Length: 315
Image 1: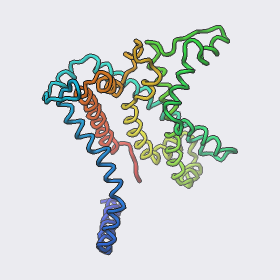
Image 2 (image 1 turned 180 degrees about the vertical axis):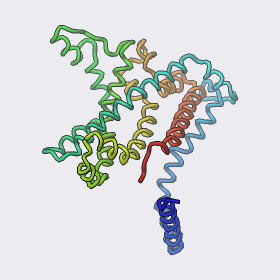
Image 3 (image 1 turned 90 degrees about the horizontal axis):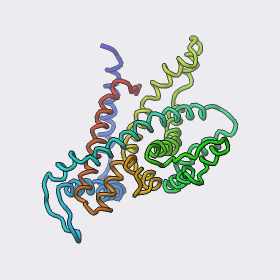
Image 4 (image 1 turned 30 degrees about the vertical axis):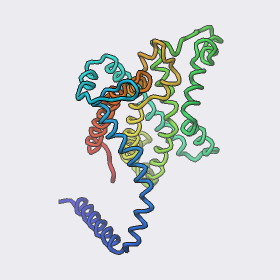
């Protein structure tokens, strides 16, 4: 038997004993005030996050009529859900957006984080510039890109006209989804870069020095040292990015005209939920759509948690 599992088990047992001793050492007054301090966050979590989940699940079994009246309809919404071609198309658009956005964004963010992890002049300015899209209001980002993509007077078409190309209808039926994907990649690089940069800075430089002395090149050091030690950070970003990608709404809502034909090729499940529940007024069916999205995200997250054992290294 190796010493590593025994050492890890010993550390875990020691940590549990320490926690129990600390809890026994606290007085009832200390525990009371500790719960009082945590109560506002727990109450907000319960009211604004936990309760709406159960409420939405109940609404998915109801049918809504005029003047906000609802009636129990059982599984009718779910029967219609799995036979609705619009839901199927929205699901395909949602996965297409996530598949095209997340890998490209992660790859670019990793390159940028590695570059910004070097000791170069003005590094703080570069980091701020890359992170700027993350702190910008999503509505402002979408409106800016909508102007850039404008087919009549947009900046991209103006630049193409200088070389006798275009104009291109960027937000038309065939290219609208790719335009939304481009905005998603651009706006997510800053957040991913900051998290990856923090992960890179936690890797001890002694590993790289030892590998260099052994003759390892830059590529070997990246795949044998950087990626294994950075895998927990990459795993966290993969989960967060996938959840955010499957919930895409802002860019579609603000960039694509709601009554245009391009909306059919770009609308996501969240956009379809918004249109069904708040424009068409069918809150029960809208709740069923968003419940489907919740189940999809939960299933994919569980699969990711299971696969992390094969490629995520915490030691």
